[in-house]
Image (cartoon, rainbow, N blue to C red; front, side, top):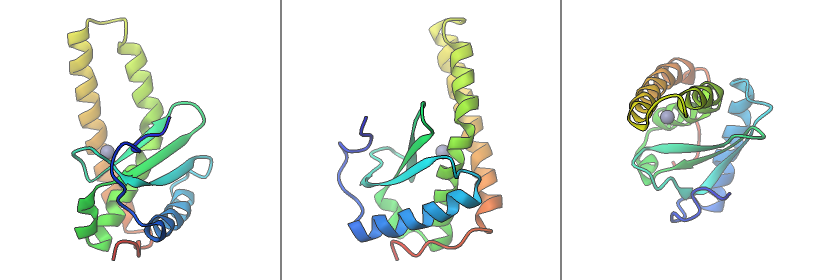
Amino acid sequence: MRPFEDAPILLTELEQADLQAWVDTAKLQLALSDWSITVSRHETGKDTYASTYIQDHGDVAIIALSPECRAMTAEELRATLVHELLHPHFQRVTRLAERLIQGELGTRAEAIIDEAVQITEEQAIDRLAYAIARWLPLPTALR
Ligand SMILES: [Zn+2]
């Protein structure tokens, strides 16, 4: 599985290395030392500032940014990256909800619950990222 690789390349090798170094430090501060987290050089290809692909087995995550990230302040980029780094913590809750829903309910109920869980998860992560980001160093990449 090579997520994001159908999307255009966004980051130079230097920018990727700079962001990867920031993520390597931040993941230790966010209790994710057992995760393998990589910053993709490709765009997210989605209608969001950034997105994270999480591989269910092996605690592997890949983060991709959007071109809009270039216009962000260091504070905004930091909050965006912290948001993405909080997704792995929620992954097991999300997968459990999906498993419980699948097969037990009709597809319409499944779609409605999936969407409600996703929206609530994004709101919770945004609030946590806002609260936590100030304690992490500002990223120097994309300046
Ligand atoms: Zn999110």
